[in-house]
Image (cartoon, rainbow, N blue to C red; front, side, top):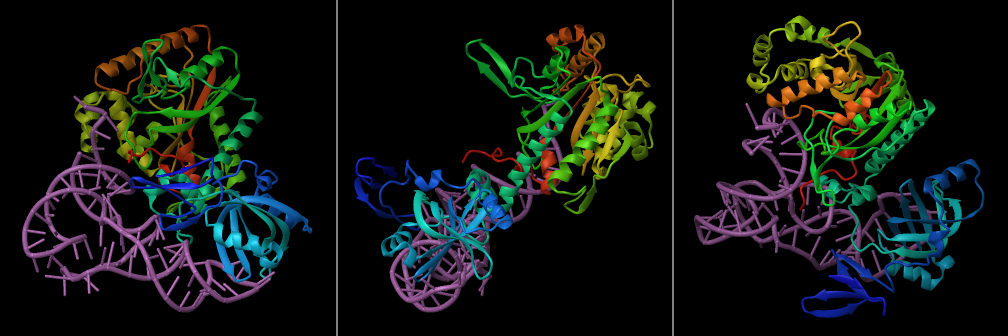
Length: 505
RNA sequence: GAGCCGGUAGCUCAGUCGGUAGAGCAGCGGCCUUUUAAGCCGUUGGUCGCGGGUUCGAGUCCCGCCCGGCUCACCA
């Protein structure tokens, strides 16, 4: 056990019963010599420091000049060379070489660096910029300050931190040691920032709606339940913000979007985390055709401003996001795969069930009609959809919040946007007829009674909102984690979530 | 939940047929003023995930458990 004492600025190491003050001790094989405190409050070099090492380097590349700079960063390399020391300090943006000379720093400070500065420490430096013989931009250090001590040894410098369990449990170490991890999360931030820009451009208003909801609706999923003491009632963590966002359209917001977490009480695997990030957006006076164009445009915008190309490698495949993206109708795709058309699937349930059993859909014998169609589609169609594809015009049975198709009462105006078999987006012309919506909810209740645990609950307040008049509206949700998986070319959702869910140790 | 794979030094990894637990990095002591995975010489460091069992002897074989990964399920 270690603690700091403010009075005499010494480290205490508790060994068995005795308490022994030391200024030097070994921690995970690393010898620590500590003089004074482990961190300093009034850090001169810290407060003067440049914002970003990368910006500093870019500035110097544009207009090199003999200037003094002040920098803060984590020491990630030290190379002692007798009367000189080279090293690197790193921040999130990059790293820069530092060069310390005995004849510049003086005997005492030079020795202090050798004795007291370790890999991992947060160091402030001040000095002149120059280029070495090999051309590397380097700070010739005139002053330095230990800003914060690192007590643990850092992960191995060449291989980084590989153990995935450690990388997720101690993400900060992953970020210190692995450039790839840093770049993924910077990319994530960039994508979200670009999305906001894009929505701004179209006049969308960013809003926040409840995460704690009295009824978990708006999607087919099992919710987390929590309890509110004061109100003495159960609340659910939202599975989707959909109904609240549509209430805002009723209230007169013409276009809204929300970026936030949804929570689903289901399994954890390569593509599922119990909390995940979605952007949902709704635009009045649009229909799903407008959303198709909008989605195409957004993906082009995101790709051009991040990867700088519309063609990206994902695993073994090359994805081409050159618009227009492929469009295919739901039942046409099903017919192509099964030889059976819409009339078959919407006809006799038992015939559909028979087909499902032939296709080895699990538990086909007890699924509802809607679930049977859904599972057959997932089984035969989704796995083949690699290139960006809009699947259009879903059956009404499995889309309780979408508006009936203007040309076919069995269908709704809905699409899913599928890339590399991932369902990246789900969108539809919103159902804005309160009577129809009520009937659809009643259908859902029937499904629930027939055993579909994920069927949606009736939301009376939402119906009431529709009764006040929801303008014609189209809405869409995009899974941001899945999108990042594609852009980062990773097949695990944990690689794009900073702190993924793991069992406690 | 099932099957397979993995857990050995702070980190990255070896460990043969069951016979005294290894390397590199990091650390420590030296040498070295343009190095950059610096180099060279020397050196410290282990509850082999945890608990049982078999055996003269277990990192290694057997059983159970924990954690993680992959695959397939579950999500009645």
